[in-house]
Length: 294
Image (cartoon, rainbow, N blue to C red):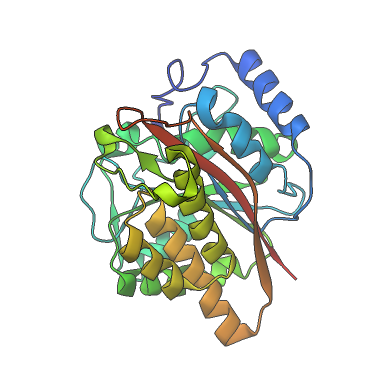
């Protein structure tokens, strides 16, 4: 039995179980249940002081009584990957309690021949999956022994590979007992991110960033993968979870075509880490969304 350590606890979020539970409860209490029960959510993965309150709007839409499996798709920040990778570990630790990795689903995914295994160091270095674990643990706490997690590290996928992984994961998305967590921040703006797109006609820099992000969010809401891909090509917006989002959009497209499922995705909250006014400023944007089946 090998467990992934909560390597970002004590820095990106508190390592005190009591404080963490109280913090998450407060944020969840401030968010409305307005677009649930969620079958998939998009939520940020920054330090909780920056993005924790935004993430609550996504997690508030989850109905824990239904969920048995939680797929967490996070972008790879440190390891070069052209596909997707799974964990070699059986448990993921959080300050609240340990989460169990679903070995049955992992075996099914490995059998497709399209998933590799991440090293323990890559697993523990990556924050894009870990930052969702406390929220998952909190919303699922009354059913803590009755659900599993499926962490998936998503590499720099071509549009064709986004289609492939979308098709592979679509049957799981079709299952009402599955919840998909798509880990993504939105625009990373500033010289330190090498991205300084600015449409001066909109007003201040932060307003230009907001307009750019909202354009992307509106396209994601249309559930059209190719439209989102074209937007990214046109503007180069630094949405770090663009590939996990692309996989979700392609899974949705697969279900629409094969099963005639009707789905609706809605963004519920948006924020920026700070407001940019000059070229020396920088910010990261955060957004929360929920996908429901109609």
